[in-house]
Length: 328
Ligand code: SF4
Ligand code: SF4
Image (cartoon, rainbow, N blue to C red; front, side):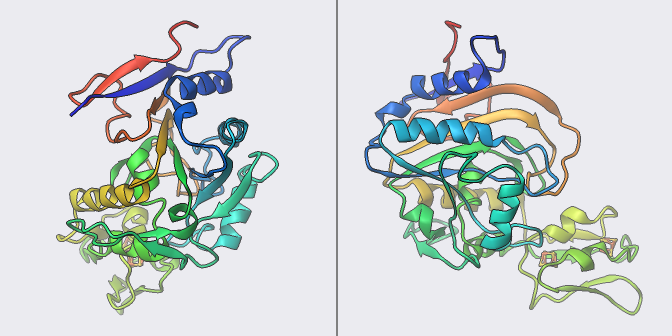
């Protein structure tokens, strides 16, 4: 297999070269102008961040991307999809309000903002894939109908997947609510009664009313209601709610990879990873714990290449790394 070229930029700036300028140079060097953008609907998939989280990507990057795409003839729009768990991005109205509070609106982003899977997360198209885990991923309609997919992702830690980067931004992030259910369907947690202290946190935060405290004041899950979103596991500070034996990060990551493939299959796509403010947990949380590392690099890869390795700051067997701004 031909090695993919992955372009990167450091985050040093000067009065004549700020980060937005560097990002644009990186995009051009990595080949964004070669995409068939003229008159295309270009979906820019980004995470708007849960209100209260400050690690997500600033809208300024999205605005520069949208402006560049429009100058190349495209009709860009920003998009993300509704969540499975409780929070303020579980339907399009709350999601757009949250996006606006975090600075994403048509004025700041210089393009329209569309929730990909509609008002309640039920708008999707099945993309036949014949995957090992997911035969026909349920991809948000607005993204499935887009001519081109541009992934702008914030690289960070993730409670279930290990890390969240390009694949997670597409695979989980472009799944409709039904698709997210499929991704998580082996993820139903268990309660370790010896560890559960009955603090009630999981009960309060389960969006599906699937946990209650039993007569012994231990959490108990109603598996007929549980959708396996993993919120209770992530919230429990006492190892009372834990993932079941069936669930592994490996299985989830396979599914995410299959969904990501369904998103980009048969259409031009382009990816940029921002390895900055690398928080230990996902931007889905309404807070962000201290960053593991503040700023590393921006990486971008040419269309058609797989994004799986672009977060690694080194050459690999499938990638060659090219400093896109070495002349600055
Ligand atoms: S499982 Fe965890 S979060 Fe839920 S009540 Fe028990 S200790 Fe609290
Ligand atoms: S019990 Fe846990 S995994 Fe199941 S739906 Fe509720 S929060 Fe999600």
